[in-house]
Figure 1 (cartoon, rainbow, N blue to C red):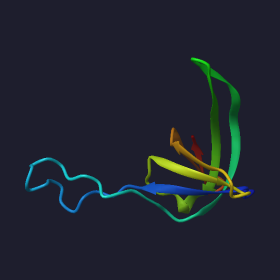
Figure 2: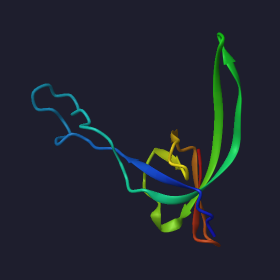
Figure 3: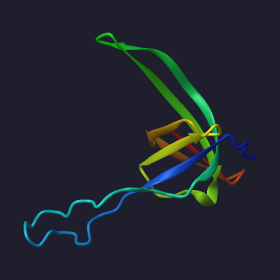
Length: 110
C-alpha cells in the first residue's frame, strides 16, 4: 500500500530524426528531453544531511526510497520528485530499481 506524499516524473530522452547526420557523418544531436506524466508515489528519506563542506561551500547529501505502482514503471535513467507541497523539484539519477512482487509495487533507490 502506497501512502502518497509526492509525485514522480520519469525523464524521457529523445534522439534526432536520423541516427547519423548525413552532412557530417556524426550521430545526430538529441532534440531535447521531456518529462513524463505525474505519478503518485511514496517518498521515504533514506539519508538527508547538510554536513557536506568543500572549499568553504556547504552542500546537502540526500538519498531516497521511492515506492510506485508496479505497472507505472518506465525505462528511464533520471527522475524528478515533486513533494506534496509542490514547492520542491528534486532531480536524481536512478541507482537501482527493485520489483516488490508481493505488494505489486516498485522500489526506486535514488
